Amino acid sequence: MKCLSRHAAALLLGLAPNALFAAPQQTGAATAEPPIARDVGVSKTKVGTFTIVAISDGDFALATDQLLVDRKPGEVSALLAGAAQPTIQPTSVNAYLIDTGAKRILVDTGSGTYFGPTLGNVRKRLSAAGYSPDTVDEVLITHLHPDHVGGLSVDGRMAFPNAIVRLAESEEHFWLDKANARKVDASVQSSFDAAAASLAPYIAAGRVKTFRPGASIAPGVSAEDLPGHTIGHTGYRVHSGTETMLIWGDVVHVALVQLKDPGITIKFDSVPGEARTSRDRVFAEAAQQRYLIAGAHLAFPGIGRLERGAEQWRWIPSTKLVAIP
Image (spheres, rainbow, N blue to C red):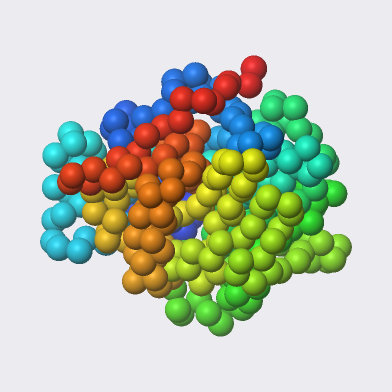
């Protein structure tokens, strides 16, 4: 699969052609993380006896003024201006490996060659963490946008040759039927081709298996329905001993804004009202139960907890991450 041109990649994400690869700006305190993790691109933590490896695919620049959907005119601009932040926001793309001891389960695969040189680092960094791609037993897909599945294939071949790919049945049915393109925003219509190309070698090899909401994936790992961002958008709940982590995919895109007002959606959302409902539910539950969150677009490594503040939700980055040399 050839890398998209800058113009094509920008259009795929609904950005101005020069916006996608704009130089990243410093993020605000709401999404700060341990500096050591940002520098190395891979870090690990424990959930019970399981090892969770956070893997940075890289960063891209997201044009909030073109993509976030205000609930009232000027709200997003005002929130960013109040935090002295630009409208072009640096956005992480993160994947996560769950090592249960018995299985190595990768959640999402990054962008592959779809979005140029600032992304596409999952396989390289997975190897740096001590896991070669052929040791991955299963790949769990949160949803079929190309920044999550582009890394599944390399030049039409399986990037993880021994893995079974699992995803929600409704997600596969929707994105592998190009007749559904009219049902989504223009910013994600190219996702239909990317999904088909990324999954193709696994489908040909009989290595794609679908599930329904709530399915058990492996001991200690289950699928959680988080609809709205896409029809079959799925989080993965990891539980070992007394500890829990929810790998929530794209529940949040711009933390600085959506922690202030979770009602703000993004044009990428297939069903914005459902995305808002899923976000409200997960925010409340995560704060109440104090479990860990791992987010695909939270500043790398994207692992921490949520707290309910007086005026906004607060993101508390985990301090228990260890950099992998």
